[in-house]
Length: 177
Image (cartoon, rainbow, N blue to C red; front, side):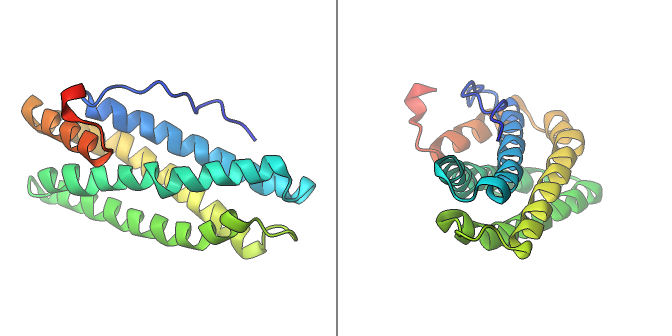
């Protein structure tokens, strides 16, 4: 199980688009961990390393990834959705992917929380594959299509407001920004 993209170096909330891109890297790294955990469980079962990795994955996707989706849906999507039909269609696709990811996560998290002694079921493995595949596709779409639109469409003031909202959502006092 690899953790090569899990550094704690993050841009500040004053650069929300860079922060979102780093969040994407962390999501991808946790997908790598999830896939590694599935492989590890086949060979070693629910040993201490598997338990620690499952906790880490569960914590990340239940908190940070969820906050990231809220950043999109509460701050970015509403600001861009009304600009054009093309953007509205892209926002609709991204929202649908968020819903699919949440459904898949709901199927995965119970087994990650308890790590079945007999190993993961075929259904779990399939859902994990679907989850990671969809996340990779979703992040590619956001990085290549959506974030460039955001950068070209929003003013510095709007980006500042988005960064402030992201900080508040995470409990970071605005005075520390």
